[in-house]
Amino acid sequence: MLRSLGQRSVTGTGEDPRVAELRTAVSRLRRELAAHPVEFPDRGIAEEELAALAAMTADGAPEAPRLRRSLLLIAGAIGSVSALSPGLTQVRDAVEMFGSPPRGRG
Image 1 (cartoon, rainbow, N blue to C red):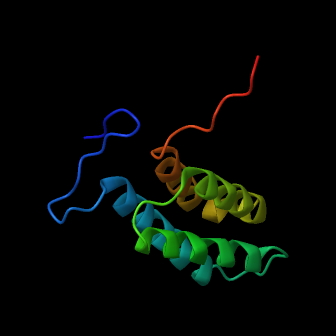
Image 2: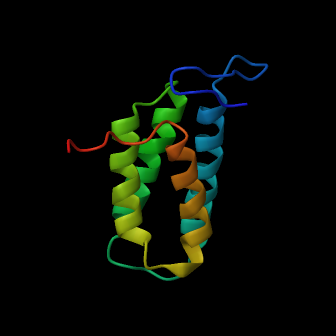
């Protein structure tokens, strides 16, 4: 169960379940991207940022601003590839579990 920002449940292994969810989503999208037969101009960017996200999940709790930056780069790189849309949505949902970006001042 997720709690308010700053409070987290942990799995039986002591791992933050948000990190586990993000790791799973990133792994899935990396596999789907590797299997995608069509080359597109920004594929390398998507691959690099997915590798960076995978590394962040290996290091424990990643920083939300860095996660959002990687997500934006990945979405920009593969956003028009409809076959990868479900995997991208799963990554986006996992990133959102780390908190919303700060709102601008009114």
